[in-house]
Image (tube, rainbow, N blue to C red; front, side):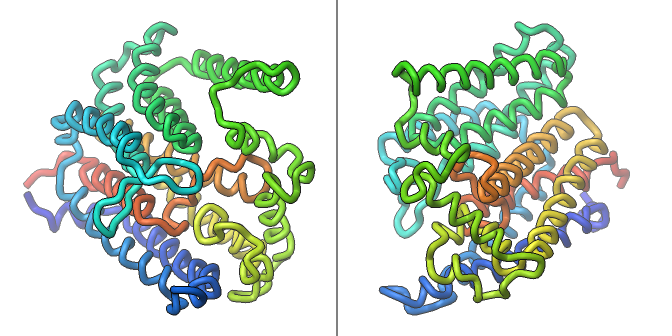
Length: 380
C-alpha cells in the first residue's frame, strides 16, 4: 500500500486545528497550575505542563498507530473488544483506586488510568459494527431494544463506580449513532422526551415524598444544584458559583494570563481539569472563549464532513460516534462551567489536563483521520 498517497489524503484542516487547541491548552494549564505546582512537594511550576506534553506526545503515537490499521479491520476484533471492555470495567469495581469519592481508576505501577475513558472509544468501534449488521432494520420501536441492551451492560458497570458523567456520554454516543444508522427520529425523540419526563417526576417524588432513587446523595445534589447554586453557596453550589464569577469577571479581553484572581488564588476548584474553561473565560475573556469554541466547532464540523464522505456505513457510524462523543463533552463541560448544566465531571476534550482523556481523544481523532484518508477506493 502506498502510504504516501494516503498521507496526501489527510484532513490537514482538522490536524492544524487540533494542534492549535493542544498548544492553547498547554498555555492555559500553565497559567492554571503554576501557583499550586510551586508549593508543597511540587517545586516545579511547569510540572503539569510537562506531564501533559508527555501525554500529548503519546497521543500522537496513538494517532499514528490507529491510522496505520485500515478501519475496516476493526470489525475483526469487535467481539473481543466488547468483552475486554466489560472485563476492564468490572475489574475497576474490584481493583479500582478510589479518589474524590469514586472508584474509577486502576493503578499500574507509576501509572493510573481510567478504564471508562477507554470504554468510550471501544463502545464506538463495537457499536458501529453492531449497527452495521442491522442496517435497514431499525425502523420499528422494538428493533431498538437490542441496541439499548448492548450499550446498557457496560453503562451499568460505569454507573456502579459511580461515574454518572461517562454514563451520559454513552447515552449521547448511542443516540447519535442510532440516528445515523437510520432509526426513526420520532422514536428517538419520544424516548429522550419520555426519559426526561420520567426522571423529572422521579426526582420530584424523591424530594417531596422520599421516594427511593438509585443514586448517591451527592450525585442527586450535583444533578440539581445548578438550578439554584446559591441555596448552598458554601457547599454543593460553591464550584458553580466560583466558575460563574471567573467567567463573568473576564469581560471582553480578560484579566490576562497568570492574572486571574479566581484561578490564581485557588477559589476556582480543579481548575486544570473540569473547570479549565473558566480559566480561559477569566484570563482571556469573551475573545478567548469564542476563539476556543470556534476551534472546537471546526473539529466537530470536520468530523461531520468526514462521516458524510465515508465510503461505507461502518466508516460513517464510526465518525458519527466520535463526533457525538466530542460534541457532548464540549457542550456539557462549557454548560457546566457557565452554570446552565449539572456538574458531572466531564472534561473538556483535548484541553483539560489528564492522561486517559488525552489518549482516548487522540485515538478518536486517529479514527476520523483513518476514515478520511481512505474515503475513496485508491488504485495503486
